[in-house]
Image (tube, rainbow, N blue to C red):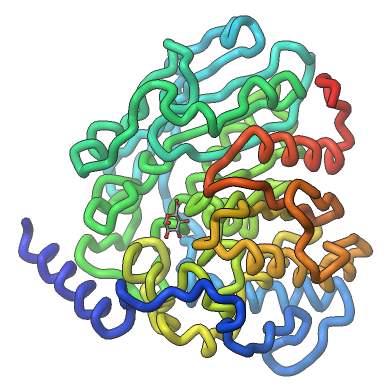
Length: 429
Ligand code: GCU
């Protein structure tokens, strides 16, 4: 290992000891949730109350966006200087038994420093409708080939790197249960997926194998306090997928949806907040650092997440490890930044690590911002019962079962998107 890298890891470990704590206790008892005040999304830092859309858009929204950039996910560089060329590497007009047209597009990235990197997008377009269609954009965990049994789907380039780093389950179709392609296609939606490791390999030690080294000023051995972490880089990658889809003539660029599960749900929220081309932003079981309120300190907490995944957030976020009370913001304020576009949060009953109640409350507390736009947030502070989706301008559901993405989740998302986009589904439901 290079000396610089050793020093960097030593530094990260020192920060870990000083702040984060892998063994911090985890509370699952609602009665032990600390008493706290939910930060008021409508009150500006100087105490002024937001009374108009103008004040929200010109003052409060930028102020909150800055807090999340400087203190949680890190700052997204305005101009990375990275160029992208798209290369169609495979296509099949009769994929999925004729239901879809499949395209596989290689993204060739080149940094100003001449370094290059590649990622692979898999796109399914429905054959049963003509013209432009809405699209659901969603990263996968273990490669495009795991999302379907279709033989012609190429293995994602990160497979070898991640497998040798100990990541398993890269076989064809191994995560197909999470990808309701048929359902989406029959309902007239395109689906685009990419392996998230193609953008930033998900390990604190593999940063040099992703997009990061293409950036101006990239230092292998150090990170500034507000430097973006993996979630920030993945979110940037979602925007690059949107760039491509805008050029794809079958895609309705006014109907782009970003959907992510778990760490990728955290990512879809951060991507959707920053990139207004995403009209519906869906967080599936995103939990801590995603939809769940941090200040409840129930289930996964900031000490655990920043210790176990030191590369996900910006280093400045570590300050709140075992100190959620000091946070000047909370995750409902992140969700509120999606308005007046649509945010959807989903939870699973057995996923207590992600704090389903905290996920609901976060979605609920976006209400005042939607109200500013004459839109309707979630009407009640009471979390709805299992399998009772709430589809207002904000969406929420909780389903039975574990931390996962299921066909039930997809059905709810499609119903919600139909409502938002005014689509008429081709499937009877
Ligand atoms: C871990 C992590 C969560 C994350 C999840 C996932 O459980 O603690 O924060 O959401 O992995 O991405 O599957």
